Length: 216
Length: 113
Image 1 (cartoon, rainbow over the protein chains, first blue to last red):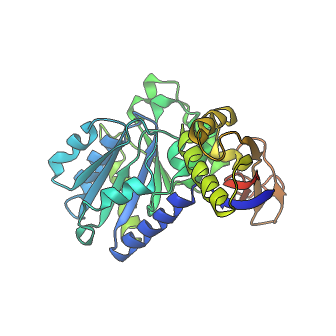
Image 2: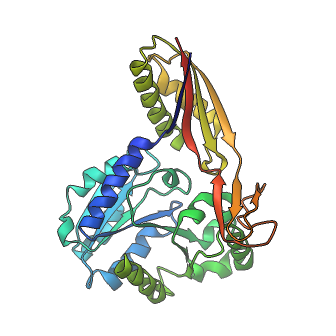
């Protein structure tokens, strides 16, 4: 006999994400899920953002990493709460791992919680973490074809950071082609061009982020 | 490789439904994936086989339906199915669209006895 189910396969993840979103709302925490390829510069971007924001907003970080705590150690100098989730080979974070990590934070004393997802442009897009919004980070050295190849994240993200703009002269990255692909995918997606190592464009992006945090 | 995590979640749902319906054997599992979710059917089949082994659905046939991308224009209400990931209405050129289909990730049905 046939039994109709019609159920979201990831409903267990979705339900937990819903609980997390409610918990964040109660505690007025803005949770930001950073998604990019490995090596796009999420941690360096977080270092710049912590320099700009961590003094004025109570900031915490969840570091998703397949293995090692190297990214977390880079952020230790900011004296902020950081929890590492080692996925042990898993290519994305899910809401249950976030829920466990949250027990280590004093949410009442937090304004911003950055979640650095595992470097991957496909898998994290299927797993809602209960975040307030997603940020996509792409670097110029990856090539200008990432939006065309990985459409989902560019539809989901609230903004896109194009990192390593200082390296454009050394690559074949074509900003016009990149913009044209983005326009087809998500014409209203705000694009911030930055160099997280040099600091270019960080002020403008941090200002935008601050507006989102205040309005969230 | 989100296929494995998705397969594990699927097998848990199949086991729960089979237990609830008192099935001794699940013979077929049908899932629907939207094109944008980028699940690779061959990889998913492998992941499903690994996750389902030694369960009530261990010998079940897996049927994967990939649903095409469909967008509805909020300006002129036309529904189109772009071949590439172009989220612009081909009828009027507006980018103000809703995705009608293409993001699905659900288990449609199971068959068993």
